[in-house]
Image 1: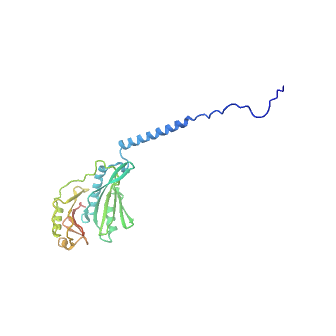
Image 2: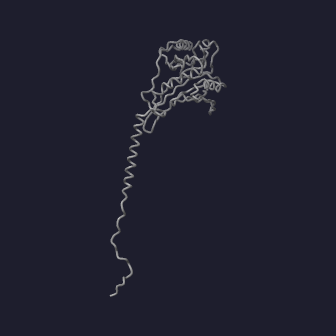
Image 3: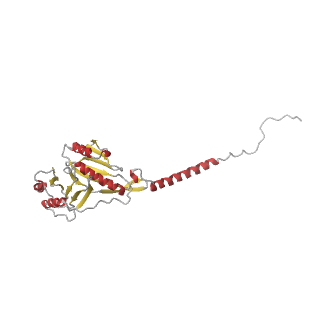
Length: 287
């Protein structure tokens, strides 16, 4: 019998061994999940405990005093003869601070006299009298000159002309957490602005407002700027000529239905629209 090995198919060695497992993949997935959980916990702790570093973490109650002081600075910069009125504070809820948190924004505004053709000069003059830290500047916007400034604490200031001989200066917090909310300063409306408001309403044949709306702002040198505003509803349309005698035939602004004049230290502004008559009287900050 021959001892030669027969060539051909190799003898079977049985079924193939399974590929070795890869446990490192399971460990990688577990580590990734644990790291994501850790990051979420650290983020939540930081938002809850760390001091704020961006606007969205400073709540509305923290920003409110900054806005009020900014309004006072704008009133001083505009000058007692230039300020027409302080607008009421407006809080708009429903914005989103984050995808998971609601917020609100606070806006206040100041109306300033700016006859047609003087808007850029008026804005430039205001910008030049604002604090240097605000970095106020006046540039060209889509509809005319615009003022931009930073009042600090992520509170923005913008100013632009309106269509009725004014520029409107707006102080805006942007969207941020509500916190305990905005609380406006309280004061009594008993100064010369109340007397001037009553006289204007009388000239227009409107009853005096027993509880006029009062808006204030702290002046940089102390004291308060005041605006009292009649909240009278609709009635017969009034004419600006009814106020001419109080203005001494020397109005600051006569662009019907808007009329403004000075009565001693008070600026009276009337908006005699067809649906409502709105009259305000303002005492600004010393220069």
